[in-house]
Image 1 (tube, rainbow, N blue to C red):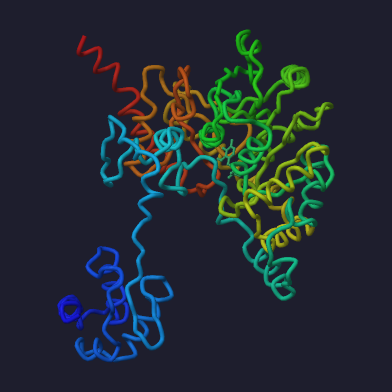
Image 2 (spheres, rainbow, N blue to C red):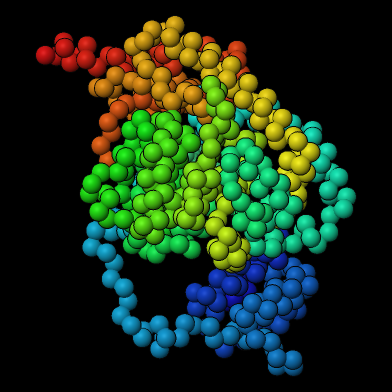
Length: 508
Ligand SMILES: Cc1ncc(COP(=O)(O)O)c(C=O)c1O
């Protein structure tokens, strides 16, 4: 015991900001786990140890209590405190041979062995991740102007609701989300997006990512095939892929999804499409293609996931009707989000599912994600019912329309018609085409270094990239910042996208 007290006294740092109680507890736990204190060893009395260490007796008593509560020691009244036997049960541990280290295991910078730690799908998710470190600034695509969000209105509604907060708003959500919000959304979607639904068919989620995840878990099995548009949103691709689906990229043309003969011969379980505004290129799926896809889905039991992420912002004409509204066979799962209409960090989205699946999805969402955030949902419901959503969207459509025009003017001023602008009729971004030989990833990286965020089209392709370009967002850039930020981008483009053939010519 003398040895224990000596060892503890040598380790204890009385000058440290860490209280003596915490230090002593950690030291004794370490001594027991490493075997320095063997099972069965009797600990000195609290009075003796406190005296040896020069700490209050109460400190030692607290340490012994905690060690006893966590199972490190056993205290018997009258007979003292003994180290418990917590050595791993060797019979249980050695039942099967230990896993062999993978042959090509290698350590990454953090010291974790890559192949050993990660699943194959986890590793792929990380290797192909598209998420950006910056989420704000010129010309971040897909981000609305959060500075324009009517925060005071929101906080007034929220303050009022908190005054009457009760279990109905503060517990887990009943499957499917806050009922008045589902009613408000079904009214909104019927009018604004021609979606055919009742409040029962609406499931509130944390956004499109979660909606797709839920649909895949409930409707597909690992190994099933999913069609995705080529190019498509990397986030949706990641969700499908990491759920164990096999992805088939399907080409798109001016009329949207355009499956080839070989694609049609092998019907997928899921087809994920953006018919109202193809992401990222911006075309609209023609009525003929919509009808063909719906009929194909009916015949082959394909689930169509319609991602309707930003269709409210259409500048030349009224927003186009949803694919779901045309579906007579209940094959469409419609998913949308408030992220682009209000602000991305809100994390409230919704899905509209066929009536016969509504109860299944309500149970599924509650079972998998244990949803909550009813207070936020209640605020949103009031926000919609009081007409603020419609007026905010109307105001933002005008604002974003002006910014879009300013950015197009800046492109034309710098490049004439040398660089095409694609998919600018709707949404929060357009694609600025680059010359065929350009490396759009390199241009985006150089732009980032110069302080301008754009995304390379390359990031959205999983196969051969048939055009080069940059996703350029205008919605979150104040009018007066558009021209100077584009001047920076234009310089980067001139240096990186036009320079190569010059060099090649010289080299040749
Ligand atoms: C096509 C598309 N779908 C979905 C999302 C993300 O939706 P959410 O934020 O609701 O998960 C994005 C975000 O940029 C997107 O571009």
